[in-house]
Amino acid sequence: MAHPKRKISKTRRDKRRTHYKAVAPTVAICQTTGEAHLYHRAHWHEGKLYYKGKVVMEKEAA
Image 1: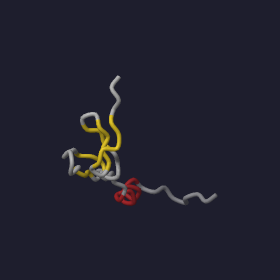
Image 2: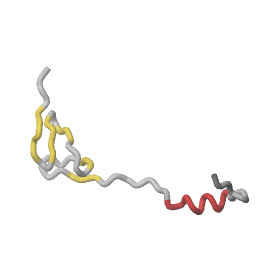
Image 3: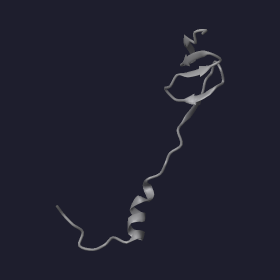
Image 4: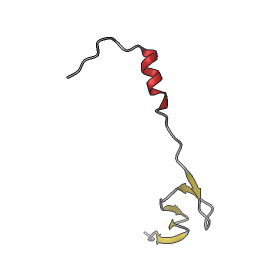
């Protein structure tokens, strides 16, 4: 295996890593409920599961 001939300085290492950033997730607003949710994900609102603005499932009463 290859080994570095010289130690890479902290500055040089950090310059390389500047492009690694955390990106905030894109949030959509449901047209039916007005609820904020992640794109392409179903979300619960008042006991109902919505996907693409339509009710997919309702919570059962216990």
